[in-house]
Amino acid sequence: MKKILITGGAGFIGSNLTEYFLAKNYQVVCLDNFATGHRHNIVNFLNNPNYELIEGDIRESEICEKACEGVDFILHQAALGSVPRSIKDPQTSNEVNVTGFLNMLTAAKNKGVKRFVYAASSSTYGDSEALPKVEDVIGKPLSPYAITKYVNELYADVFSKTYGIECIGLRYFNVFGRRQDPNGAYAAVIPLFVKQLINHESPVVNGDGNYSRDFTYIDNVIQMNELAMLTDNPDAVNTVYNTAVGDRTTLNDLLKYLKEYLSDFDEKIKDVKIVHGPSRLGDIPHSLASIDKAQQLLCYQPTHNISAGLKDAVEWYWSTLKNELV
Image (cartoon, rainbow, N blue to C red; front, side, top):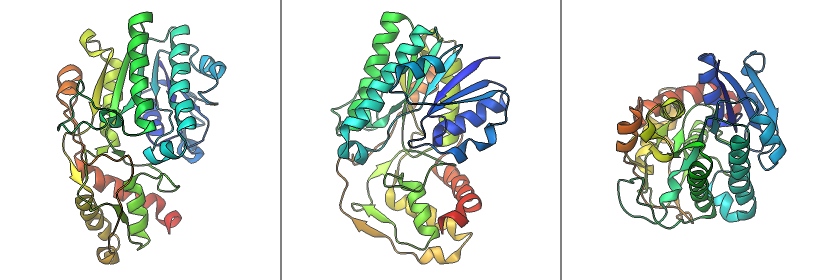
């Protein structure tokens, strides 16, 4: 039985990974300090004999060493996300995303972990205007958050070359789906819009709504983590991959989808007005990933496009959070 450490395992992506790998009979260790993760995300795992929770902070090297004991694979999801958060508080973002990342890499090296798969970010492409985004062509970062995620890639590359630990970075493109938190100052756009529409509140779109993103459903992200963790292709390790669908959707079109799908549960949502505000500092206008590299080296085939993913996500939010959101 292989043992996986999932950092940030009580968060949106981490808890989905935990659920998936427990169902496949892996031993799963969750390391989380609950700064952004939630206990309700992991409550169903606590009585599973293959699950272990370590409450701790990746900024503490001793905790990282403890969590890596006997681990075969690490799926490193722990981070402080959000461009606006990093602009408001760049120092804390750096402490968690850079120092914490380095602590985890060092602990993985010291404990003989086979492979280190980590959450990278599409923000690494920065001011590059090329579309689609190809892994080996990036621009200058546009936010402190983007800098931290690029530094992660540099550290992973050096550790793989210097210490022989296998590292794979997954550049996530606007991940969404079940368990994504709709609350808080830095809520992601899809759960935030869903919450507002359910409450018949007008969503506020940054700019004219024509900015576009490669929105990526959580099941595609789970697939990429599994492929990266288990690949035996020597050409597929010690590199980075776009983790996306290879299609882009404007914010205006996104809201059309959400209103349509939510209206199946509440017809009044069709009449909710959309409000446009100023563009957000640090945002890039358009994002579209090439997934050719992942398809060729990892045999990645996304199972959900934006429409299929939103239908599943909307159904989950309505059935699970309706009473909490209102």
